[in-house]
Length: 235
Image 1 (tube, rainbow, N blue to C red):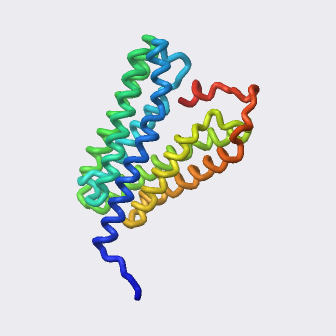
Image 2: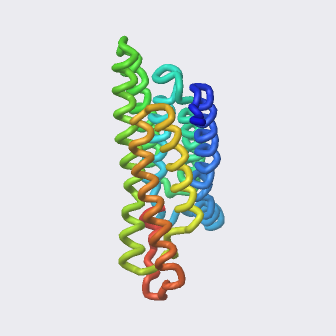
Image 3: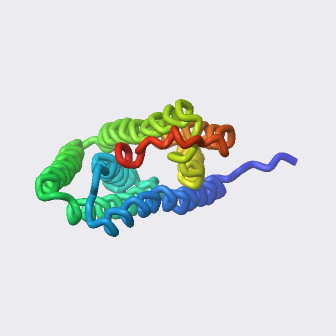
């Protein structure tokens, strides 16, 4: 007997994948906590860079807007995960401003303001597009490009792991969270027939698998001379 999957079953599977993606995303959102514990303990941002958090905030805002009912009516899970991510990134940026030197405070505040201005311009501009399909296509392309750019950032870590033959700068649970979250939203996008979700997350899944394979291969091979200060240049 051939069992056919009904539309209601697809919706259940899609929502389940979206919920799983939201849960696994917490692993990514919580990963900088150790960095900020150090910042708070030392009351200094030292040589840490705020750039990844600024870019992550912009990415989360854009993707959250794509998932909102104003753009797409069937991507609630995309909106929730990215709204949560935006809150985490904003908290990290505020903490960075609190403990940064005065000159850096001004720069970071300026970058934060630029993010909100750019996002506001994106929102207002997209709402001027009367055709809902064109509006969704425009924001979908923007969010897709933004996601692919974000998922490409681990290429730096992958290169470092191969060069140093050490996984000390590539935490296992962070790589696992990346893989699980990307795979969940890959399935979510496929079940929702949304290329703007399954294409970038498919790339994220491949990169996540690559990191896990490298972790298994180089685990236990760390050497003292491979200790480069990745956390200062990347975190």
